[in-house]
Image (cartoon, rainbow, N blue to C red; front, side, top):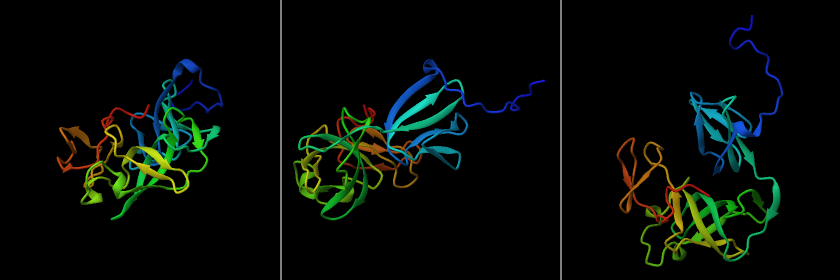
Length: 205
């Protein structure tokens, strides 16, 4: 008798119709919970949550209930001036913010070749005076930025469509939602400010 859970796992490739391609994610982003899915390739578990360990697209196997992240594997990209890119804020200082570059918009399935850390100088954050950079960006924020210098990987978020597209609560790490011109945490009700992109919360296409 075939008891539940007694089957020996077989290396069988899941048919395409059971695979669902999800959003583009960076290492450390939440992709599911162990209540919903089993962790697949490119993921890790922490406290019942499943996080990405790779830069790529989420792949959901609906039949086997496995979530995995397919890394970028196609022909590498080279950054050019004017490129719009996505990245994660890694450090915020008085004069600028450091960005871990994830991918170029429209070419997210390719790795970026010259992807040293990018830099958003305080003068390139918005088209008005910035008093405190910590009010504009926080570490772990996901941003949309434009390349203005490829040698030093200088970026700008001054345009309305550029800036933070996903942010997490500084208090409880919950994902912040947009309310008016501020961001609010549904979990602990904390309100925060950022240099918010008009694309905030729409997902990385």
